[in-house]
Amino acid sequence: MKKKFLCIALSLIIAGAQMISVSAATESELKAQKAQTSSQLSETNSKLSSLEDKQAAIKAEISSLDADLVNLMVNIDVLKDDIANTETQISQKEVELTAAEEDRDQQYAAMKLRIQYIYEQGGDATWAKLLLEAEDITSLLNRAEYAQSMHDYDRASLEAFVNTVNEIAQIKSDLESQKSDLEGMKADLELQQADLETKLADKKATSSDYDAQIANASAQAEQLRNLIAQQTAELNRLEEERKAAEAAAAAEAAAREAAAKEESAQQTASVKEEQKTTSIKTEAAASNDDDEDEDNSSSSSNSSNSSGSSSSSGSNSSSGSNSSSGSNSSSGSSSSSSSGSSSSSSATGSAVVDYACQFVGNPYVWGGTSLTNGADCSGFVMSVFAHFGVSLPHSSGALAGCGRGVSYSEAQPGDIICYSGHVAIYMGGGSIVHASNAKDGIKISGNAAYRSIVAVRRLV
Image (cartoon, rainbow, N blue to C red):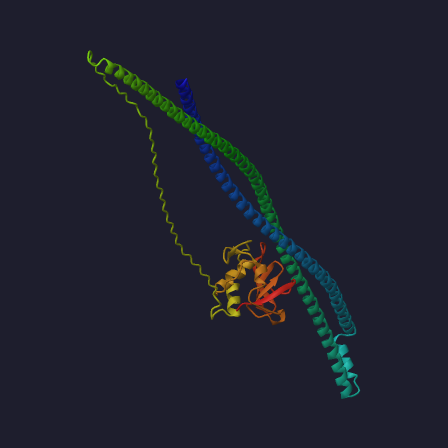
């Protein structure tokens, strides 16, 4: 019975050990799977972070392009208003020109009638007759003076009317040239608007693609987090089962040890009982031998039995040492320097104008900064002043905040004239040099106030 109990206990211990081994193997596999899942989650989170950074950058670009597009549309509207105002002025000058031409023609017709009358009445003889018929020298001088004044009046009037017609015609021609400039600028801005709208559409498409990628990465990360949660729960369950199996194995081992001790105690008691019985029997036999001492001699020998002892000892020693050492050292040095060079001693307004005028006739290129191969309005101004050591932004809007502001009436050569979406260098005398448009390139215009002036800035 005792041996059967021992066999059952032993089998339970072996089964528990096998269960612990199987559980350990499963835990190891799950831990490896969880580590792999965690690695995938880390990669997915890194990808998600990168996509979000790219998305933020593309949204910033979209915002900037939106602002540029709005600014362009505002500038186009301003140009439309300037063109409309110029067309109104041209219409007015056309009316004035028509009236001046009519006055000139009327004056010319009247002068022709007077000349015709004189010649029909005898030409030079008529003048002589008028002079000879004079009653006295005073009358003679008065008639001569009157004749001369009529001649001078006719001539002066005709010249005045001709000059008026020429001036109005010149103003009309200038206005038409200004209108052409404005229309050229408007066409350039409309091209820029179309380009910005194309870029904006591309950026928005890219942003939508990032949205889809971010959504997919987020869904994948969520799935991986759920999988890690399941794996963690399974590992916790297996750990509890392992601990329970270990506890059962420990209980079975204690039971086996107790059974072994009990069997040993029973065996010891049995030995002692047999020894006691043998001793009693020996004493009885000795008493009988004393009665028959003379006839018989006997010897008795005592038998001794030894009892076994069982001892069990166990020692477990474990020692472990962990040492970890780590050192991180990082060193970095960064230096940044920025220098804004002021104008040199040679950077006078006249020097700026003279230098800028060297490039008249060169092409206009949107976004360009080359004085020879092509520049836009702000690129032209920026590159001209860069020659004199003055650093300026490549933006007509930003240039309106550079330097010191002055009124247009105080403008001097070398000042910059800022318009809505355009900028030019003032030459003095109401003229400007500027990168006008793709049609005219870098040119000189005779009327700085040909459109609404936003600001006049002095840089040198």
